[in-house]
Image (cartoon, rainbow, N blue to C red; front, side, top):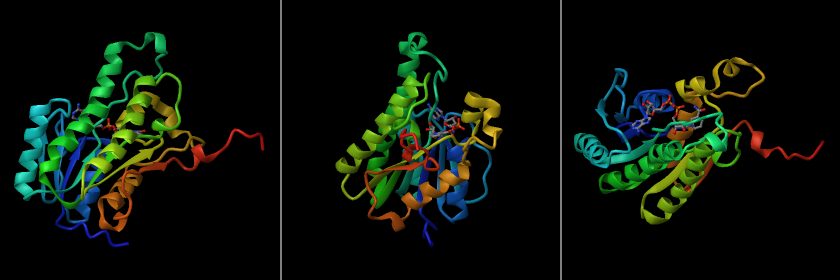
Length: 238
Ligand SMILES: NC(=O)c1ccc[n+]([C@@H]2O[C@H](COP(=O)([O-])OP(=O)(O)OC[C@H]3O[C@@H](n4cnc5c(N)ncnc54)[C@H](O)[C@@H]3O)[C@@H](O)[C@H]2O)c1
């Protein structure tokens, strides 16, 4: 399938690591122009690329970073929100502090809201916004209350923005566990157990590219759940 993303102006947050970095590489491989936004420094990548340091929870700095990328590329055709944190994984509710909860929502939800808000004036007609949500929006493991709540909110934010923004498609991708520094830090060696279904950041990037491209022009306001079919299985004993 031809994605026709060559020359498109793309902005990716969370581009220094994991899924955001894989998305940046995949867009560059398609010949897109890519702006990389992260609070950490981004690896050097080949292609028409620019990196801007910003925290997605810092509204003035994020707005300035978006404007810097958009001015350089003459607007934005695609915006991908990958910046995210997992928060206190494996922490019972009683030990989850209000600060933990607020910091996860600040990055994972408010960060995506601010991205959409400040990218909006730069978006071309027919632009595509793609957020990273998670299967944790739909199925939950214990000890991850802030993260699960935040990803459910990203799915609702996706729908709200899809309705709000005329001429712009807004979708999100909801992968199960992806082998990235975030998941390694949270889960450790279980990721290497062949019985445990783990996907690669490059798998997720392919969904993002499809949603970014005009091939998905009829898909809007949707959450694409990529979990090896795990959530489709009923608890029925058969
Ligand atoms: N790894 C998984 O299993 C998995 C599964 C489903 C969804 N996701 C989601 O995918 C996205 C990317 O996760 P990942 O696994 O690649 O993690 P990662 O930790 O490898 O990368 C996240 C990136 O976001 C950046 N970031 C974090 N907070 C930021 C902030 N406030 N401002 C700017 N940049 C910030 C980090 O510096 C990092 O470069 C996240 O939204 C995550 O919730 C991950």
